[in-house]
Image (cartoon, rainbow, N blue to C red; front, side, top):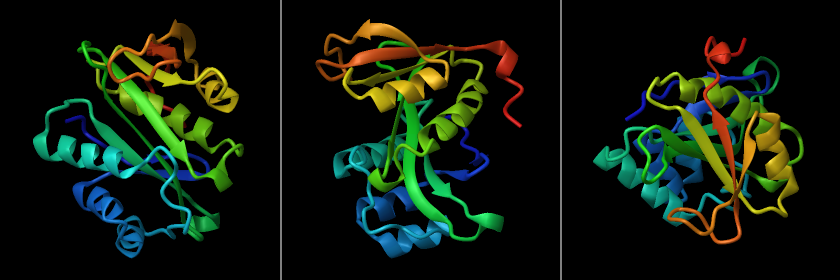
Length: 191
C-alpha cells in the first residue's frame, strides 16, 4: 500500500481514508464519519460517484492490501483558522489494470461545492503526493466528453487528452482518457 499522508492546500485538508473512516461512510454513519474527520458532514453526503459499491471496494482493497498504489483522501474545506470544517468531496488512486507504473485517479465533489475550484485545488496538490512514489510514472483519468468542468479540472492540472477509452476494463464506454506524466521539476511539492 502506498503510504498516505494528509495533504494541505490553501482551502482544503485532504485526510487519508482509513478503514474506520471508510467503514463509517459505507454504513452511512454521518455522526461517526464527522467525528473521525473532525468535520461537519452535509446532509447531501455522499457525492454521486462515491456509492456503496465503490466504498465496499475501497474497504476490500484496504483489508486485502492487494493494490500497492491504492489510497484515497476525504476533502475537508477549512474555514478561517480551521473553523467551519466541512466535508465536500473525496478522491483517490488505484493501479490501472495491466500496468505496474500507472494509476487511475478519481474524485467527486458534492454538487453544492462544484464550480468553485476545489477539485482543481485538490488534484493539483495530490499530484506531487502521488508522484512521491518513484514507481508511479503516470496518472490517468477518464471522463465523459460532455463533462466540460471535469475536463477543465484535468487540463488545469496538466493532464493531456489521450483519446477515447473504448470501454476497456475499468473504463466505461464513451469515456475519454486524460494522462499526466511524471514531471521531475515539480517533485519538490507545492508550497
